Structures are given as structure tokens and as C-alpha cells.
Length: 56
Image 1 (cartoon, rainbow, N blue to C red):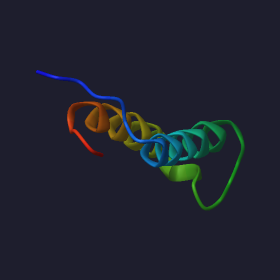
Image 2 (tube, rainbow, N blue to C red):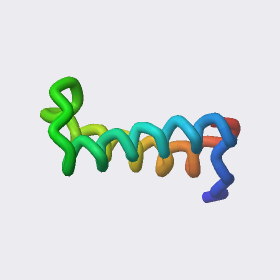
Image 3 (spheres, rainbow, N blue to C red):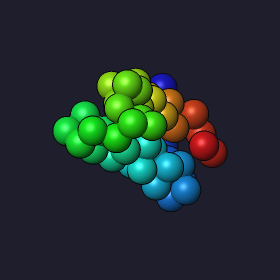
């Protein structure tokens, strides 16, 4: 199995999603407050998938 670094755009999107989830966990944001744990999971999963899939 060959691992590859994710592209910069994928990395930035995953970090932004993860930060939104992290901030939503501590600050009462009505839009993302209920989805904060899922946003953290999606950000981490996107980084993990981008590491396994070449060109993502």
C-alpha cells in the first residue's frame, strides 16, 4: 500500500471543516452546534481518505 500526501486544497478544506467542528463544540453556534462532532469526524476522515487515494 502506497501512501501519498493530500493536495493542498484537500488539506485546507479538511482543516477548515475540522476547525468548524472544533469551534462549534466550544462556542454556541446555532448553525453547526448540533453537527460539531460530525464535522470533526468528516474533516479527519477526509484527510485519511486523501492519504490513501492518490491524486485527491
